[in-house]
Length: 115
Figure 1 (cartoon, one colour):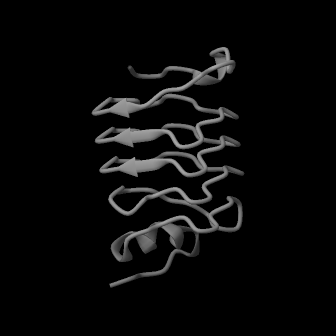
Figure 2 (cartoon, rainbow, N blue to C red):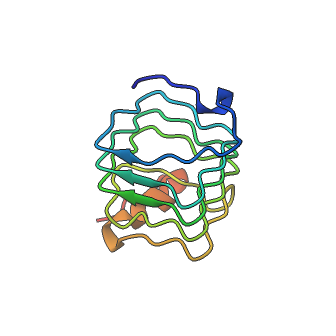
């Protein structure tokens, strides 16, 4: 399912979950995805700009090149996700969960070396 534009779906009653899906280049622009489960998915270059992912579970997903811009990520569980880059100054991340090894994805904009 590459390049899907979920922002074009009728939001009334929209409820989805994704299990081992390839959602590369998909757009979730301004989509409400509260409590959505993404399990074992590849989300390369996916666009989550202005989406509401609050309380979502991002379980063992690869987020290489995914865009998070003014996205609500409050209470999202990123502990097993990899390759994400999230700017805490441009996104809501209150009470989101990250692994210690994933913290680097929150500091990418500073171009620092973390060893």
